[in-house]
Length: 180
Image (cartoon, rainbow, N blue to C red; front, side, top):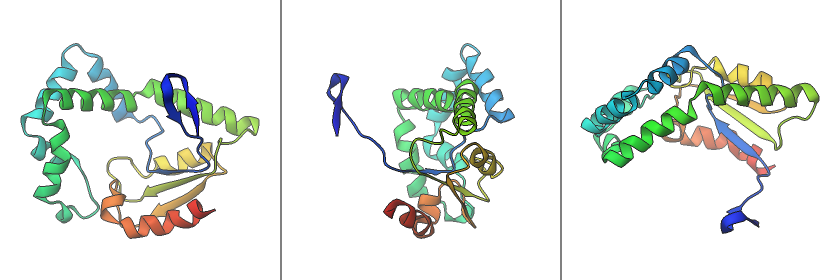
């Protein structure tokens, strides 16, 4: 480990696993980005999220089998967004992490690396769930085409929260890759 400016430890990754990352711009992300740029919309969304955080979490966290949702889990996901600061931070995170401008820059960089033969900087494993309503399954092959040297896996009968819904199958997919 080396120290970076500000005494924050910097780690050099030797491999990476990405579990259903968005990565590709979709029309719904463009719509979200445009909406969040309208003055006052982010504040309204934060109030909506904060109004009833467990209910909001329960309605917006999707599993392959929706009957697996629990009230306890809704409270766990809802607690961080129950305060004004937490709800604002969540909306900010949503807007920043799914901003089409950043995703376009990301895909352009991946295409540049692929086309120049540079490849991804570390071995990478991409895992996508075929039944994910949060990140549509079609994103997986598109992202894999930009990083063709990455391993690519489908996780069957699972969804966006694979670490909760199918942790054993997810671990079985990733363990051999991470062991290498």
